[in-house]
Length: 300
Ligand code: NAP
Ligand code: GLV
Image 1 (cartoon, helix red, strand yellow):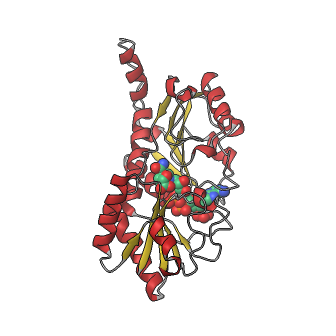
Image 2: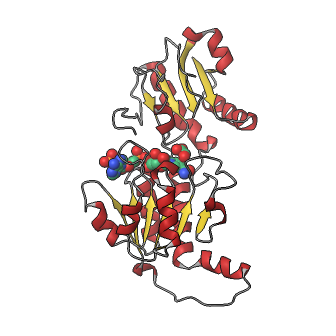
Image 3: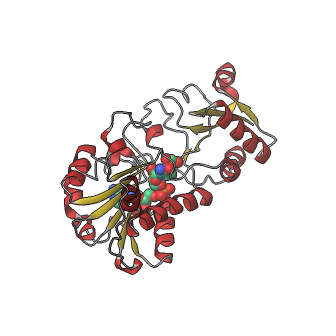
């Protein structure tokens, strides 16, 4: 079976993936884009990490596009993506565990004022802040999928009042009114783009915090900065941005109430994810059931 491996991978990352994939599926032949262009009819599947638009055109026998990313918004934005080929996203328990750890760290840091204490240290200031119990903190995770559920479980395990928001539950403004920390783990779709806007922030109680671990385009940056500058929100932890890397001149970098992470909340780990991808590759080859298929119409 010939499989195209392509996308945003530097040469070390590509080598890492090739090693992990070839170990999990020694019978496959792994092609880069140039090799695939030389024999397009031989390529039966593509394993992709946000490939450049147009990369998957002209492969007439393609049976599966397997994303190495959990979020497929960038893939779906490529109008040349072959419409009839099944698209699977990455679902790996190791990735969900990493996301749950980042979400938990955000909650602990906000609850125990570690971001404020770090600021105080830089200013040489010694001042204890009021201490609250974990069960007094209400954490709302937006999105009840693989990532959202893993994060909410991990946070609840430590005694926080954590829950996932679902579209068929309490309407969002009512849920936000009862929230001290809102964590975004929604996919980026037409419905969710720009959801974290001025109305969203205003629905949160004063001194609430926001954590965005999903996609930058969920947030209206100017509205978030206004909510922080006015003192309504006390802090934002941001892992993802409209433009990545975050431009050097962006206000987020220097804002005292913003913590910036370089899209590192949950990276795909070839050691576990290769086995997930290979299960689907073998199913595509053998006519078996494919897992974690994206519903293109709904966008995730
Ligand atoms: P998933 O399993 O597909 O879950 C998505 C969840 O969002 C589902 O529960 C879905 O509800 C819900 N949802 C979708 N649209 C909604 C809407 N309009 N209103 C309310 N709920 C809605 O996805 P996942 O694996 O948890 O990943 C979520 C996102 O995390 C990815 O798309 C990606 O953007 C982001 N991510 C970021 C990183 C990082 O390092 N920062 C790493 C991995 C993933 P239903 O159950 O009703 O369908
Ligand atoms: C990372 O952001 C992913 O979607 O896997």
